[in-house]
Amino acid sequence: MMDSWHGILHPLMVAGTPTNLLYTLIGVFIGTMISHLPGIGPSAGMALLIPITFGMNPTTALIMLAALMVALSFWAKRKSAATLRAAQTQAPAQRVP
Amino acid sequence: VVTGALVYLRAATNLERLQVGDVLGPQVFPTIVAVLMLCSGLLLAWETWRKENKTTSPLPLSGAAAAEVRRHRLVLLAMAAWTALYYVAFEPIGYVASTLVYLSALLFYFHRVNPLINIGYAAAFTAAAYLLFTDFLQVVLPAGIFQL
Image 1 (cartoon, chains in turn brown, cyan):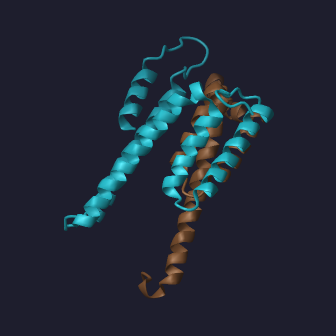
Image 2 (image 1 turned 180 degrees about the horizontal axis):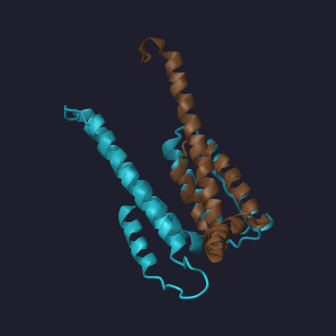
Image 3 (image 1 turned 60 degrees about the vertical axis):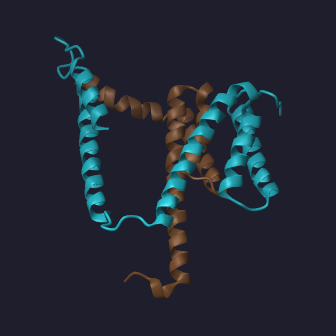
């Protein structure tokens, strides 16, 4: 039973190490940076970062890519919502009830 | 996802059972993951099927709309090929040169303004990422033809 709990808690402990938390922060930071590049979406952003992870520790690389994906998706959703709001403001007559 | 979950579940059930010590054995965690994956896959399939049924238009696409769909597919294929080329060129010509060219080309296509602005964006991102990873995080990136 203890081994099973250890198996469940171990990944959380690995993700919570200072190095991995730093890479999570960097993933989010780079994701925010990429999402503000005009015309670059989440898939192109991921494509840009994947080769950088070739020389990294696999666990850290996956954690950083996950953080990057979350940041890219978050900003992509915000951008879509802002575009939709702008379109509705410009054409109020065509607004869907 | 469903196929992957089934393969994973089969592999998890093949794990050796312990006779002493942990009564649950090493199968528990992979089995939980596989069952959750299977449920997610089935839920995703059901939602996709429901959405498709709702949005299916009885009218066929007009000429312009069909051409637009074809153009989108071509852009997707071209982007996949361009990304594959980027990965192949990454080691021999280095991070800086390959990323600069890759990103500039994407920006030229998706953000059609002054090309110099696009090159500026691409150069700024490439330099910032290179310095962050090599100097601050000590990640080894291929220097290739450029050495910052």
